[in-house]
Image (cartoon, rainbow, N blue to C red; front, side, top):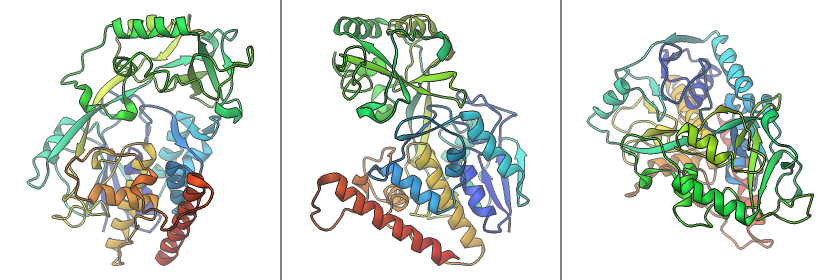
Length: 432
């Protein structure tokens, strides 16, 4: 039977791929290019609406482990990311167009994937996967909220500005990655006076109204810089403007604060301001961010924006396969399940796609345990949690190492990572 997948974001595309590669026909439905949400601009699948970074690629980091587990499961999203990689130190960052283009072409050319461009405003009959994302259209959001088993929540997300490299003052900017790990980032150093003036300008700047905006509902990983500045004068200096490990080659010392810029395209013509999510009005962004040394005449290819995201109160609603407990065969995937981040969204799509495929072919569904990063996310979403909030993958939600490990935290993480990879290899082998 054909499985319907609604939404061609990262989760929906990964789910469609996992279904098709297991021989299950897919009907992939996406409202673009007929309609766009406020944050979407490209007609391509798997559009990266915020950062172009998929974060750390090191196994001693939980998201790096999650990526490696997904590679073992033949993830389309990771295959595309590896193809579209741009320099970013120890992180995996991508050229947006190359990344989305690879995924779009792969799925549209697959003989088992039939694509339909239209908005869906009703809950599909199983077998189906709903992966419409945190920016779900009003019609579909109403349909989901109208299900008797469902209660929805919301939080606010933001995207950082992007500037052109040619507009930067390279006499003030220097190349370096933190702690000498290459030179993939551009760094704008600030003196104490420059930093204090910048923070004061942020505090006084005019923000764009966002309907129903409450700072308490902003995910911490996407907190606007002006909101952080309100928490205290030094919050930014210990956050996105942290100078540690970034000595200015002209002085040999760490500056008082540093704004980092990360390459956003393969050609190296665009750079985004790392950690600079904002809801400042566009003219204010140009004025205030222009106070940063090196950005005095910066040309903005995209200004920062903020938008509301919707997610499910998933505990008790979904099981660890991202399947509705009350409606077998109906799965959810992506950020609307309560996972947070590009890679985490794709991982939920991977699990939903694999499980939907095995269910349709009459095979037992796999158990990704909490000893794996994939499984830890799924169990976090499904576990009873009275204060449920969106979650990035961390070692904190994974099952710990049972014994004391010599060598400290990194040595312990390495053991957890190796155990996880062996477990995922065994799960993969059991499906062959």
